Image 1 (tube, one colour):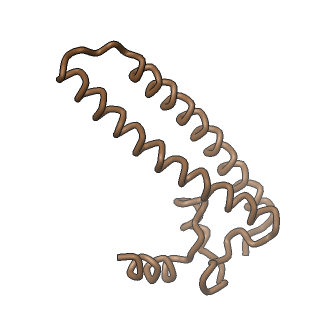
Image 2 (cartoon, helix red, strand yellow):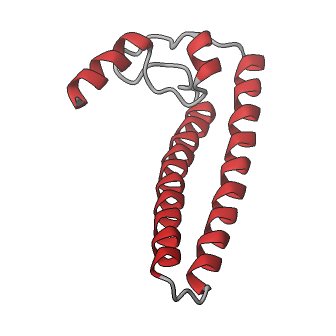
Length: 118
């Protein structure tokens, strides 16, 4: 089990990452909006902007999913279930949480869920 000090450290990391993602999303939406307002007449320019906007949207989607995972992890910190696998209810290793602070499964259960979704 994690100590209260470790929980506080993970909460700080999660909150910092959440703020970074919010900033990234604001920046991305600003750039997408700016590109959409550009007066482009060349087909090549239109294609380039469409591709760039598509990439930006894909990145934004991934970041929104990460933000949702962070919110779940922060809720678990508040209710005392952070660091507990959602599947087997065993502690998630500290090393795994260091790599993926919003991990919901231990490594064994993560592998099982990935095989089920493949």
